[in-house]
Length: 232
Image (cartoon, rainbow, N blue to C red; front, side, top):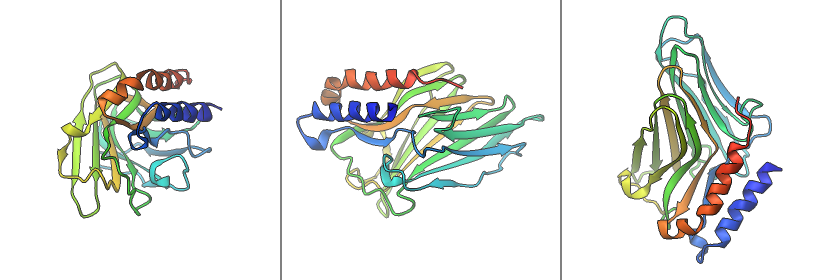
């Protein structure tokens, strides 16, 4: 039910926009697949990499697929486990990164149409937004957008410990030469301090600020819905 409420909210936002090209574009609501998706590193050494979990057939996700992969960055003696999860019992309808107190891991989330490319035209939009972000310790978030054979652009944001809110990656601030009219890959890398835990409710791309202001109440509504979900 929550999935449909969120979709209806986004459609309502799109209806407020004069031009269809300026509607909110959903990258990932983190509410698929029904059985969830996860990767785990148990008792890793620094540099260990999990298998790359790729789930396809995701109707509500950009390109229909999502890749998840973990890398152990820094491990102290006694470190036990790091995990990244989407839509599991401990993370219904959102993404969660969980690190044991002695582990620092980097998670890479990839949207690329399972290698076929997204073919997304985001040229009429202004940013990529991570909605409903929570991190207990200092964490860095890097977004990389790429066009096959046409370069890439990226931006890193580093909110402090105890951050709660939305993170906005403005296209005008991204460094690089990507063609925003033909986005084939979007990658989100999250790297927290040892023991950091992270939650993200959704990833979307939104219109120019003047239009986004008219959509503000709707976006806040989506954030409110996300925060109603139980936290593990």
